[in-house]
Image 1 (tube, rainbow, N blue to C red):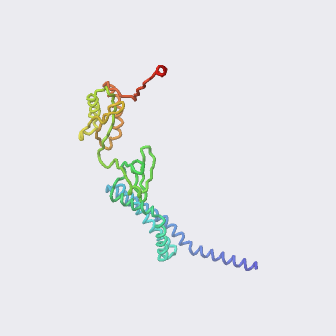
Image 2: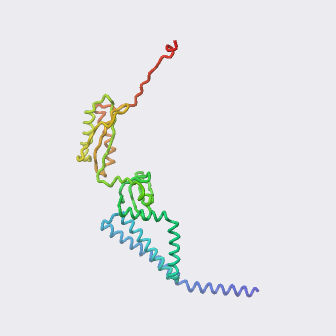
Image 3: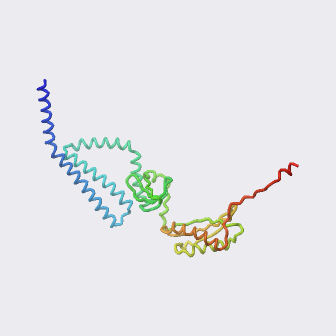
Amino acid sequence: MENISIDSVGEYANYLLDSILTYLPSIIAALVLLILGLWVIKLIIGRLRKIMEKSEVDRGVRGFALSILGIVLKILLFIVIITKLGVETTSFAAILAAAGLAIGLALQGSLSNFAGGVLIIILKPFRVGDFIEAQDESGSVTEISIFYTFLTTPNNQRIVIPNGQLSNNKVTNYSYEPIRRNVMTVGISYDSDIKKSREVLLNIVNSDERVLKDPAPVVFVGGLGDNSVNLSLRFWANQADYWGLHFDTIEKLKTELEGAGISFPFPQRDVHLYDMSKKSE
């Protein structure tokens, strides 16, 4: 019994060794092919990226197309490798088709995101570099990939939004137009001179070269508050100058209006006191 067991183990070991020696060249060739193939794919993607950059292809289109190309090339490389290992491609294709159907049903959301990415690339509601607001998030678009769009917030946070949500919901693109209007509400006290206040506000914006002359800045009374007369100041600027001009103007409003003797109101409340002792008598 022991001799039979030892003989069986010996035969199995010989069979295993023969199998390793038989398939080892194919395995080594497949590994070499994998490493070489990934290097070639990386080289092709890098070369095409440079060509697209020189051709000034839109960055969103560039990233989306290169992502798809990279996946297709890796799938082709995988098929070549399994063929090298001796796997029949016909049976593998049938298995892959069945698996693809099952995966497709399981990943309907991902397919929706892919379709959304295609719509974004074709319709171009926004591009890489635009500042957008969507899904209660806002930031600059840094990348449009196959399934997701990546934003960077003003606080340098990275936001990832599925393309399906962006293509099916409201998106506000602040960078779409070359110029943007700045609207500010300035409250002055009721005893302040409205005409003088208007002149001060217009002088502030007209003296800044970043403010566009056409459309011209305007100032008007936007409303009468409980404690203030609310002046509405509206002026236009290029997208690149918007925020810097916005914050500089706020500071100038404070200093220039105070320098002109125009006061800012504070919340007021009238309190009436009654002598309850006299009332009881």
